[in-house]
Length: 84
Image (cartoon, helix red, strand yellow):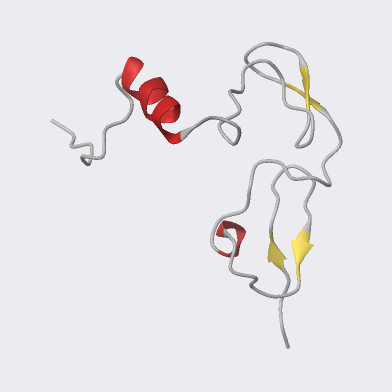
């Protein structure tokens, strides 16, 4: 007997079996089935298909621009974080 996998914390969506996506291991905060929500940072309405202004779309940027974007705020660091 297969138990459904919780795929979304936002709406409680499940899937019947693993499908090779990250939600096989960890549920997402929101998904395409979630109703729109209010962003905690900017207070704008946000959804999986219509992101608020807090989000920067990377899927349309060239790789060099994506690297520059992360390098500009020093978050493009691949070293593990260690606690003091």
